Length: 335
Image 1 (cartoon, helix red, strand yellow):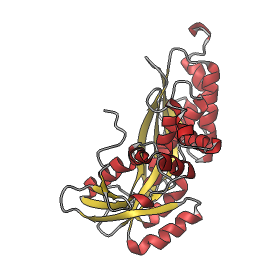
Image 2: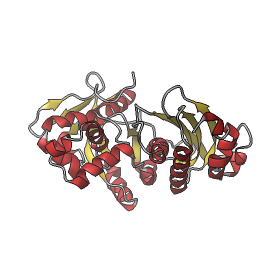
Image 3: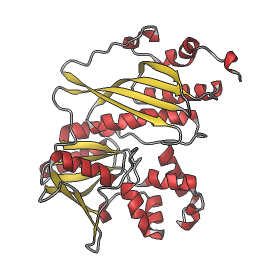
Image 4: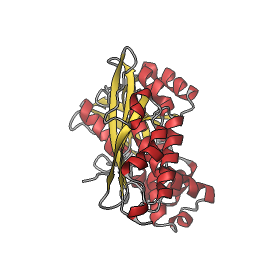
């Protein structure tokens, strides 16, 4: 397809994105700005994250799944703050070789997920990318006034919980670049597909938001690896943490890979792309937190505790044999 046969920017927006702008404040995408009013007694919670070809996904990945990933990584942050979604803005940077079929899949994937998570499109921008596809989404959420759960509020004595399972996406990335590792790890086809799927498509823990809001003293999403993100929580809160590696929740696929290659613990703790929720919960609230999470259908596991910092605020990881491991400086970094 040549550039002359493609829709103009206005036609592109009208064809693929105006149908997604279902909120009244989006004004049908015919204005330069949108307008939203938070529910009475609520604060706005704002978050923006971008995903780029060659960094967060592969150039040949389906654009519908890329759209879902772009929205979900932002919804993960809202969940960690105890917020519910109100809507999102989209900036889409299209490469020179974009095709209408790709854009149609992108819009369909975005529509499916924004409907599932009740997070409609409010507006945005469409530009040309000098390289591959880049998607930047800004989400707006709401929490009761003054109650957003911060990451820098953990206290000594808090129990540390993490949702779901860790390491799946990082192991899935390895399999994308080295498919033969599946045989080395003795993975069944379903286990291989599970790991590949977790890298391609995160599972935002939005159903956990109510449990976070009601029972967590501090919370953040784990996107750059547990070691690095827990270190950020510790520094911000001026505390330390003790974590038992044996208590980290692993999927059957990750557990099988780790049994075959024990050094993969480095990848599981430091690989990133988990998009799970890390929460510090007071001991007296543990039972209620676990029960509320179970009622929401989200598994949570206690992995350690917050302790007073006697030196540099940092997490300490211990193996079952008592050996200490250091992961705090390891994790995904753009720079």
